[in-house]
Length: 93
Image (cartoon, rainbow, N blue to C red; front, top):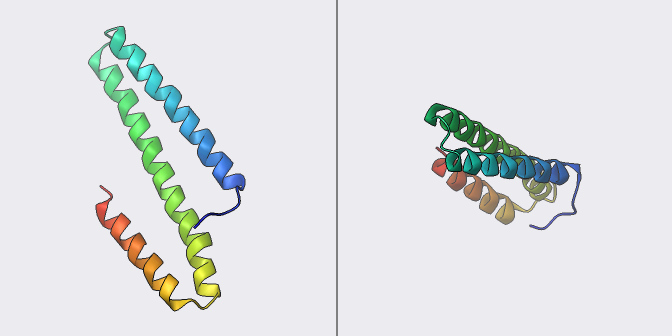
């Protein structure tokens, strides 16, 4: 469901830009043959940032898209969205 770009989307894009920078940093660390533990620490930081973004997107979806379907009393869309959320959550590590 396409929505208008809001502050949360801009914030999410900023977070992605930071992660891209972190990934480039990891690439440089590997090219420079840095100490493995330092590389692993940076990988962990990116994984944590990605997990945080994932949860933010899930919350955004529930607070906006799902809430809109419930408010509009659209049971078919509401059930479909709940099923989608469950499916995504089942696959999250």
